[in-house]
Length: 167
Image (cartoon, rainbow, N blue to C red):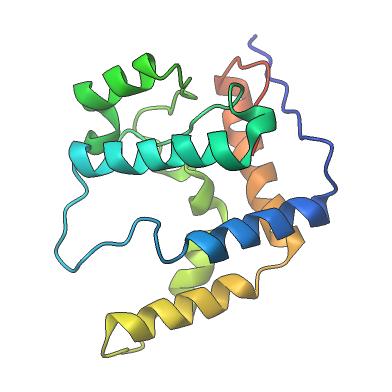
């Protein structure tokens, strides 16, 4: 049987939540901004990965050479150019089981929570949607993040054999 050990850095949970929120707040204007109708293709995703890689190197120097990417099996994620990029940059990928959309970290809690907040409402503009989603994200407590992480870990632990996964 495969055994996976998940190790968290020497930060308190509260510190980690603050760091996640700070990164989200700081990068909100730059990260994955899309225009209406834009397609997430391999070129777009490669740009996102490059920005992520550089951000990890700059902000998280302690783990810049020791992190694992987890993404699903969407076409943009599994394209040859993406696999080549990840190999060239020495970015290991946590395998995602085929036909397992419920194994994506956000599916354990975050998207369900956001869907409930947005369901049945009309917003009129993208800015209104972004404001409601951002406001809802700011209400998340430390326990919500840990619930998502724990559920993700329980689902993927039997499927993977990685010595260390850091979130």
